[in-house]
Length: 137
Image 1 (tube, rainbow, N blue to C red):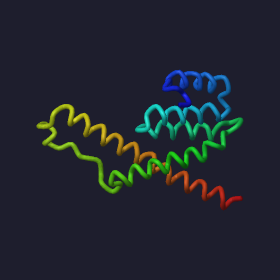
Image 2: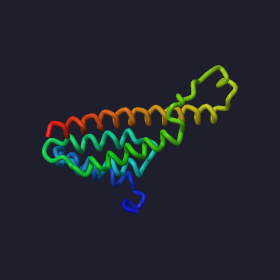
Image 3: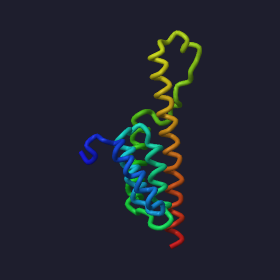
Image 4: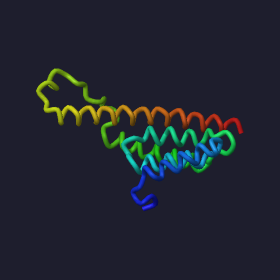
């Protein structure tokens, strides 16, 4: 495995690299890759780092575009597999009867769904932006 399961060490060094060359996109791309490997449930963190990579002032890292598209595809697949049209569970009075573990799991699922929809919203913005760039060429 690329980072030998030492995600925090890789993350630390890529953060150092980003501080040494804040205008370069490569360290931000690598931070996105590490964040995806570290916790696939937090795709919004990877989204942030990929965007930083593409918006780098001196040298954006163009591979981030295809990485970002893969992230969006994986997120869409997740949403389709987990009933995208269904809203996250609403915490009702029945939650008082639930065990704390069940309540925690329900809240985690609602958070995951919210973040997945947040990333999906940015997918739509990204697609629109790419279409605008292609028509302006």
